[in-house]
Image 1 (cartoon, rainbow, N blue to C red):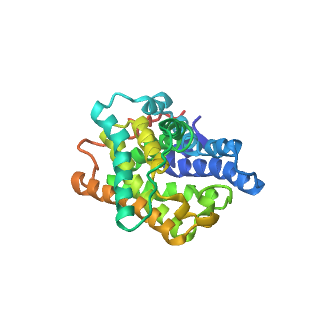
Image 2: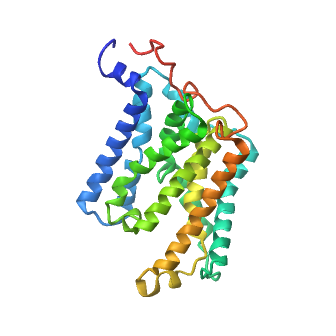
Image 3: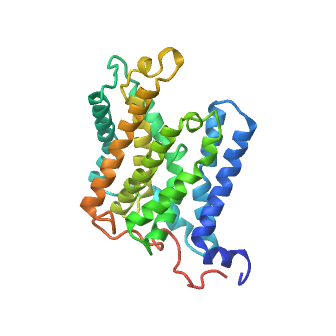
Length: 298
């Protein structure tokens, strides 16, 4: 195909990716918000299905560019990254949680240490988060957009650009009253935005340091998201008589976001803004894309 949509997509890879990712996700999640469907397992599954916009956008661009979908998808199965990085991917979320809880307690936050969720709940949250509740996005944001950006920009700048696109992509969740995002006050939304940009730096660090393992990023992502399960904040104090205490809830959110920011700053200081890693970042070719103008599109 010498003319038509495929060459146009190949010439505008980033724009095409973002447009397709947004169109798919916003159509599905926007329809859910409009429908007024109550919160349920069906609702959660459909929200997660809408989260496949980024990988679908990446797949379309790689196909249109004549790239290797197998190479791109293979990043999701790249598990041979060494015991050290699996220990970090699985253990660092607990360290982030511990620091957040410490800050919460020091600031006067009430805790209840008498009850904890079953570890099986955490394992389920990890599995769900990796394949359906957030981790599926990473095959697009980190496994496609990030290496494409890092071909021209520093790792830190690329993280910021991905973070901005990633944050705005969540918009339908904020206009849906049945989602967690939809019930947040403005202060919590702003803290979430800070966490998104900090998290984008952490995910870049994990992706670059593991040589492009989207699987490690997805597991790490799911682990950070699931940490709230074990936060010992006293729920009776946070939500007395069913009405959230604004100060205590804000304190919990601030102390939850601050460790992510501190870790992100530490990574920039230790590894540098250029690569956020001790190794060269994966290239677009590592993500399945052929070089621009390679005549791969026919």
